[in-house]
Length: 213
Image 1: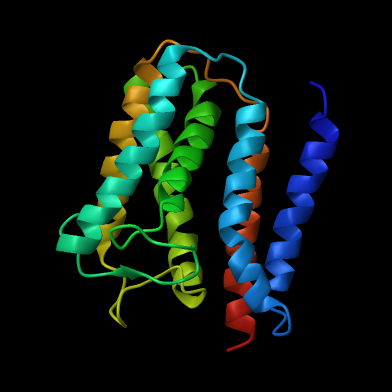
Image 2 (image 1 turned 135 degrees about the horizontal axis):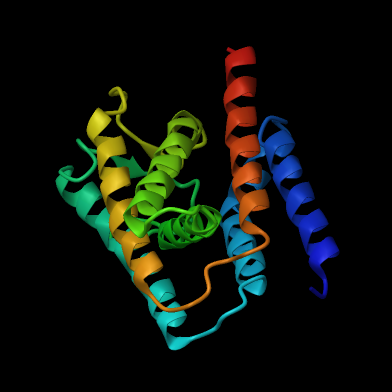
C-alpha cells in the first residue's frame, strides 16, 4: 500500500515521543495537549488502511463514535454503567455534556483494531466477539491508572470499581457483535501494530510512574 512505511514510522515515533514527553516536566503540558490530536491521527492512519468502504462501514463508524460518547455521558451523569461517579479532566480536550467527544473516537479505534485482529481467528462470531471484548478490558487495566495520572478522568480518589471493567466488556461486546455482523471486510494491516503501540504506551507509562514514585 502506498505510504505504508512512512505512516508506520510516523505512528511509532509519535507513540514513543508521547511516552517520553509526558515524563519530561518541561514539555509534559504540551504533550498532554497533543493527546487528542494523537488519537485523531491514530484513527486517520487506521482508516487509511481500511479496504472496504461500504455504507455499512460508514454506519459502524457513526454507531461506534456515538455509542461510545453517549454511554460515557450516561456514565458521568448517573454513575451506573461503570460502577460509580467519575468525571473527565482536561487531558482529553474540550468537553460536551461533561465528556470529551474524542472519547467516542477511542471506542471506534479500539473496537475496530481488536475486531480486526480477532477476525483472523477460525471460530464463530460470538467467540471472536468475546475474545476481542476481553482484550479491550485487558488493555483498560493498563489505561485506568495512567489516565487518572494524566488527568484524562478521575474516580475522585476511590478505587477503580470492578463494574467499570464489566461495563467496558458489555459495551465493547455489543459494538463488536454489530461489527462482525455488518457486511464489510474486517482485515486491516495496521490493527496489530496499533494495539501493540497502545500496550507499549500504557505499559511504559505505568512502569515509569512506578519507578518515579
